[in-house]
Amino acid sequence: MSKCVVITGGSSGIGRELAILCAEQGVTLGLIGRNEQRLHEIALVCRSKGASVSIGVLDVRKREDIDAWLVAFDSHTPVDLVIANAGVTGGAREGENIEADETSRLVFETNLMGVLNTVQPLLPHMMARRSGQLALVSSLAGFIPLPDAPSYGASKAAVLRYGLALRTALRGSGVKLSVICPGFVTTPMTARETGWKPFEMPAERAARLIMRGLKQDKAIIAFPRFLAFLTWTGGLLPERVRNITERAFRFKVNDSG
Ligand SMILES: NC(=O)c1ccc[n+]([C@@H]2O[C@H](COP(=O)([O-])OP(=O)(O)OC[C@H]3O[C@@H](n4cnc5c(N)ncnc54)[C@H](OP(=O)(O)O)[C@@H]3O)[C@@H](O)[C@H]2O)c1
Image (tube, rainbow, N blue to C red; front, side, top):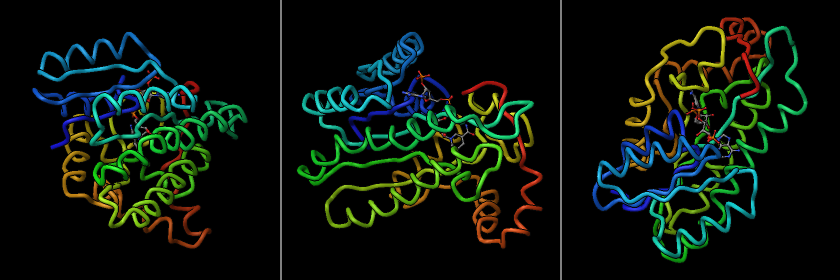
């Protein structure tokens, strides 16, 4: 079991449930997000379960800030597991066909650069200790192009490829890496999306599946299995066939989150 866990996006949804699941006596948690009040609320819940909790009111897009916080935190309590979970969906809003330019940039900066900003500062320290685990949150949306949220799918595909490549490169270093690809999970993020959400599951169940996969050191933790199979094979279909099947998955977002 990991004794010191850092979770970005620990203030909501999947990150919140992961924090609560990891919280117990002897565990130190570092929870990162921008919303200070929500971080304090979750820290309180985790402390009531016996965990020691530090919060970092930080934007994962701000490289220097997150680097300084992570390095200071790690020098105090060496990090066993970092879950780079913070993310935004972006997407085209109701009445729009194309995702706005500033939305696309926000999505890449958060979902892709935010992951690099979280992983890179800790990597040399974990490698020097020859221990530690990196968990990168991608999505089943990384398996197929998403016309309604092109930057979301692309950012998650980049995280998936980056993570799998890094996992291979880290072989023999003592540092583990898994990429997490959830399907639809009930969180404030999914609440912003209109459209069909097959096999949607509670965030608490998603957190359990993630922790189980991390324990098994899986390369890709993808769930639910059937949707993972459909999206994976969907990504292999010829473009014209895929364009027909993906009609069932069209959606809009009802704000910029
Ligand atoms: N829900 C799903 O169906 C689903 C499916 C596949 C993958 N995922 C992925 O799972 C992860 C968690 O999503 P969720 O569903 O739990 O969404 P959520 O409830 O909206 O939570 C997103 C978290 O990310 C944090 N965040 C966003 N931008 C940030 C920034 N610039 N700096 C720091 N923190 C930031 C938010 O914290 P603050 O607002 O406090 O900054 C929040 O804690 C995301 O990477 C998402 O893409 C979700």
